[in-house]
Structures are given as structure tokens and as C-alpha cells.
Amino acid sequence: MAANENIGTIYKVAGPLIVASGMRDVHLHDVVRVSEQKLIGEIIELRDDLASIQVYEDTSGIGPGEPVYLTGEQLVAELGPGLIEGIFDGIERPLNVIYQMEGDRIRRGSDVPKLDRAKKWAFEATAAVGDEVGAGDIIGEVKETEAVTQRIMIPYGISGTITRISSGEFTVADTVAVVKDAKGVEHEITMMQKWPVRKRRPYFEKMNPQEPMVTGQRVVDTLFPVAKGGIACVPGPFGSGKTVIQHSIAKWADADIIIYIGCGERGNEMTDVLKEFPELKDPKTGLSLMKRTVLIANTSDMPVAAREASIYTGITIAEYFRDMGYKVAIIADSTSRWAEALREMSGRLEEMPGEEGYPAYLSTRLAEFYERAGSVVCLGKDKRRGAVTAIGAVSPAGVDTSEPVSQATL
Image (cartoon, rainbow, N blue to C red; front, side, top):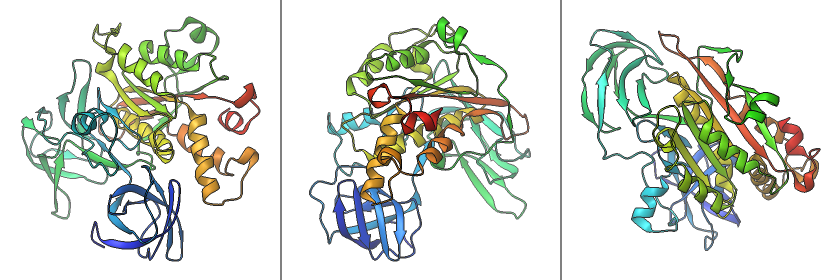
């Protein structure tokens, strides 16, 4: 089915949930565009020709009878040069670019490329014509910032012989190399990869974490140490200092890359990050902390459905840098807001509620997120090692750590 083909009609609207009829030949987690305003949505349930779509934008004014368009792909993250120092929303739209184009508020249906298609990057080839390469092999490098060098890798599912490769100035969409596989098919390699956010990126082998991650907080490092590739949670009631601790870890942690996700938290907390990080100096490099940071801002006034996507977007970006051999720390503030988004969508889908109204699959979804952390041997001939350390905040209502989100996390 062709992309942007009208495939269905809106049957019901319930906040961020839209039910569309006539949805045949579609798949779970396909991305669609809803109404003539082309709002971004994702199919989360299929029953006969009815599809339940969670919409990542405000659905005010949308009504039955309006069209639904298929995009032909799942919700994907674009991975390549341009991520570092970036500020994105929950579905990886660049907020700084949108601000320059549209002002303070995101226009509904805004369709901005996730990575800048016009900016040119200096690609330095490290492989040569005739080299045999496979998934994960590094063929070149891009000096993205003074602190981070992106290693351009062969995408998963491609292997063969390099027939063309060259150094120079390229955009993320330009072909930097051509690989011919065993069947004689030529694959054009760009500096950008696309990856479905709900699918974990592959690796060669998962290792037991062995090296401690120094957080820069002596009380944490002494009493509650965390390993590189480990998992940690910061539980506590409202106003107890979880965000302050996570900001401190983001500033001073012994990690090569920091992915900070503001998931459903207050907008002024993300403002603090944006004000402080550019001014603070990384003790290892002496450069601004933003030179090694990716920010995903999905504050409490943004659409609730995008909270869920923001967690998956963040962990996918973290896995991408892990595959280069970097030690990555991903900080999610907070997973309780993410769970509340799951609860709202589950209620609108009229699913059987679990404890305190949370969906029965809450613990499964939390496990899927945290299990994507770890220390691994990456794909590629050099068997480099990378790690993702996941640190999530949990905000139990009424200081009750026996509530479902805290228990599922612990």
C-alpha cells in the first residue's frame, strides 16, 4: 500500500485515542496521519477493520468522518550526526528547529525532519574499497562535537564488499559508501540509520557489568553504587529531590554520553537543564556538558501519548551510541509519569484494569525498558564494548513504595 494513501475513516474520538474504521492491510504499531491536519498517530490495537490509534498531538476539533492516512513505516528514530546537543520532543522532532519555524508552541501536524538534511558533516573514511564488511562494522567517523566522534556503522542486515567509499563533506542523507552483497545487490550507505523505537538494537553478546559508574555523588557511590550497564531507580515522594539528584548525575557521571528524558515532568525543570548544562564544564574535557548530551523534553503539558514514546526514543538513541563502543547513561524523569500515560491509554481502550488502575502489563513494559540497558559486546569485527546504564525516577503517590510502579521497578 502506498504511503499517504487514504486507508480509513475516523469512527470515534476519545482524547488522545482515535478509533478508525476501514483499516485493512495495516499492522500493529504502524504510524498513520490523522485528519486533514495530518496529526501523527500510532496503531496500538486492531479488531477486524477497526484500529485504535494513539495520537501524539492534541486532538481538539477532530471528529468522525475525517480521513486517516498510512505512512508505510513504524515509529522510528533517525540515528546519525546531529543528535548530540539536540533537544527533541517525545517522537524526536527537533524543538529548536520548530521554535525557529513556528515560535513557542508546536503547531499541530508539524512535520520537521528529525535530523537536519541540509547541514554537511566532515566524513572521514576508515575503510577502503574491497574491504569485507558486515553489520556493525565501522566504515568512517564524523567529529560531531569536540567531545564526541560519531562512528558510522554498517546497518543491521547488510553485509558484503565495499565497492565505493570516499571522505568529504556530506549531509546525513548523502551516500558515503556502496556495499555489494553476495547476490550482487548494491546497498547505498548513508550516515543516518532508521530504527523502530520499540525494537531493541542487536548486539553480539551481553556481558555482566564489571566496572562501576562513578556518579560524582559520594553518598551514592559509597552506599548505593551502580555499575556501567546497570540499572538504578531513584524513588521518592514529590519534592524530595529526585530531579536534583538526576541533574547532578547527568552533570558529573563517568559516562561518555548522557541521554536525559524529561518525561511528563514540569517544564521549569527542563528549563533548568537548558540553562545550566551549557554553562557547566565537563571535568574530563573542560567543554560544555551539552557537548555530550541529548535532551528529550516531553513535559507535563505536552500530549500524554508522547510520554510513552519518549522513553523508547531515548533508549533507542542510547543503544545507538552504545553500539559505537560508548558508555551511555540514560536518565528518565520520571517513569511514574510514563506509567500514568499507560494507565490513561489503557482506560480509554477499556482494558481490564490491574492494581490501582494500572494496566496488567505494566511490569512487562517496565521490564522491556530496563532490560535494554546492559554492558554488551557490539556487532562488528573489532568486538568493541559499550554499555547503557539506565537510571529512572519513581514518584509514588503519598510516599507509598508498595504501589505498582515502585514494586514493578524494584
